[in-house]
Length: 105
Image (cartoon, rainbow, N blue to C red):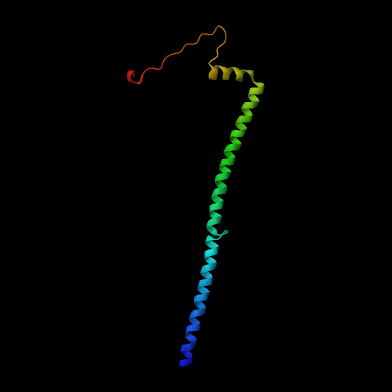
């Protein structure tokens, strides 16, 4: 019986080391530099950057179109001068109305 009792603790120690090794490997797989959590975080960041890139490319295209219109389209110049600078042609009459106060409505 003494021989059976001495082999029993060594049988328990081996699985404990094995369990610790597996837990350590799982820890690295989850939380390491190339772990699952870091990969998910990186893919989310990549998606955000792609959205931002798309919006910047759209804005760039709009600006290119406006530059093209400014270079070629004289009617666009007139439209901008009228809208932003309040310019009028000679002989035109401009009627301006004050906004009615909110209480009068």
